[in-house]
Image 1 (tube, rainbow, N blue to C red):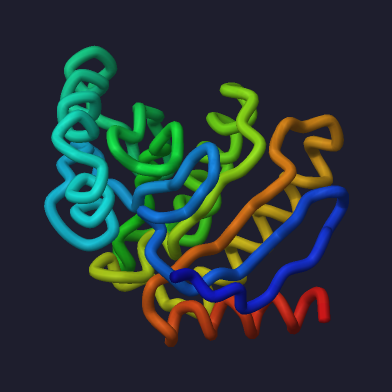
Image 2 (cartoon, helix red, strand yellow):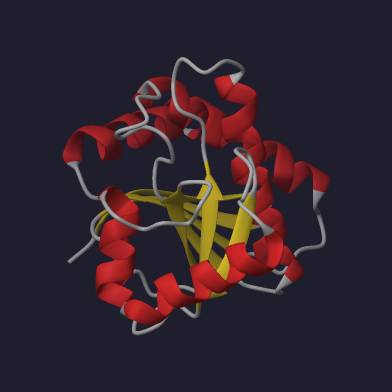
Length: 186
């Protein structure tokens, strides 16, 4: 069961920090912290592929066969298999230490939001992309997420998205996102 840690309506959009299993989120799309090959072996990607079934990996393989690897900072969309969500948006964040990490993470978040908007989705749930095995510092990750989301809300006044959630399984990451949300918005 997910725990709502913080929620507020910002610029006509509900933003929320949730602690729980992203694979159980009831929303139009969940975001996968993906690698460029969309090979869903471990971490969030492994959990999503495990819960959603083999069709997620099959659709990911087909996407890569048709379009090539997803560049760092980019995103791709597939179905969600057996998940409650309708879609999985696979966003490729940077590995910490490879250079230009903040810009690459910001690009991945924007790419995911753009795909959600392109598909006229109303709700999306993000994990803390790159902050696990890719080593992106959690506090900086939360700051980048809120910076990009706020800017995107300003730049996209007419939008289908009305619900953006930051959903993380572990308490330390959820706490960092909650702290950043409260620092910005009270």
